[in-house]
Image 1: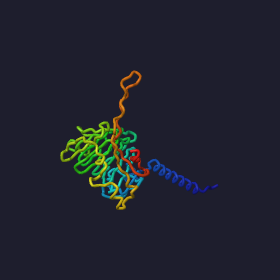
Image 2: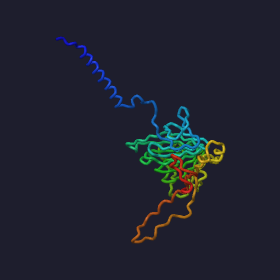
Image 3: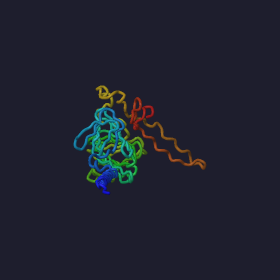
Image 4: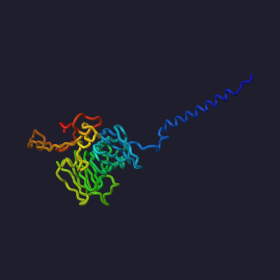
Length: 310
């Protein structure tokens, strides 16, 4: 009896084809990013709050408007207009608030989740006011964090601080922790990381003070805290009124403001030494200034308090 071999050959060809395509599919499943490598950088942070107008400007000059939940990327400059205000939460849970008429460049934001000590962050506040709260990367490797202004380099020790920058002046205050500030020189370069040698330290334990530096004199000095200075992006800015009147934003949106309350008395001291009462070190004084808001809580705003709380 003769058997036609054609069905058997057809079956083998189909089997080989199935094995081939299963191999191709498995390859893509094992390497899901191969086709997309080099197409787009990974986001380093997300917008959690926008009031007014804010933009992200890429290195090639392309500009896009920012809205809540948008990603931002290393190499981008984040810019706010008059009345604009933006909050960012980074991939290491660090947070940042940029006030009106401000411009901040995200030069470098590398967070190594497996080995946080290998992380590296460098930001540049070109003008305006920024508040920064350290995330996991800075807590693990504070010597690899840097915030530059046009005239200073700022390193941190796991902290919450605010900086105002102009072309030839800067001011800084600390909510918690400590920062180290030094003028930019040939010995303290803008492309470095961490605090520079010989930097002036500013900490919450120093009380109601802030650091001021005038680039013309290139000398830091500790001065009494003036929250009005730290709250303004420009000397002539009247937060809220002009922008609300012009219709750029609503009065409710505008009411993200800073308020200040100086301490009226020192914290209670520990009673005299007693066999039955242990000696307890006094707690650090709470920050003498806070960021507050009028009106209801806005979604994504986790950096300000109600006026009553402040």
